[in-house]
Length: 107
Image 1 (cartoon, rainbow, N blue to C red):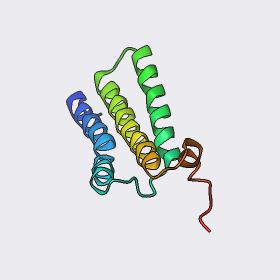
Image 2 (cartoon, rainbow, N blue to C red):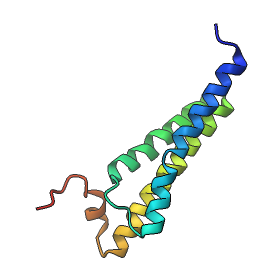
Image 3 (tube, one colour):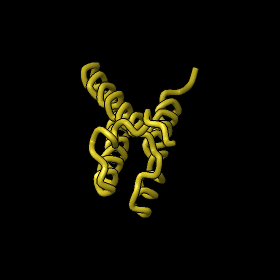
């Protein structure tokens, strides 16, 4: 059996890595002034599903590590979808074109 403090340490490490994994993409988008071809569907689903996990974590007692994990993931994905929308609007794209860019073919 794993000691509780070791389990908590690994849980905290996993939480940080989930959120920090998106940081380079957020920074690159900011530096280049566009979102490249990062998927709005992926970012949108990340926000939605992480937000659901925040709600269920709170409803089940509010484990602080899990709450931080899912809140951070929702925030990071929220920043990404915001960048996708912002930079798409700067290019003169409409919201429908921005959000459906995953399913439109480039011919």
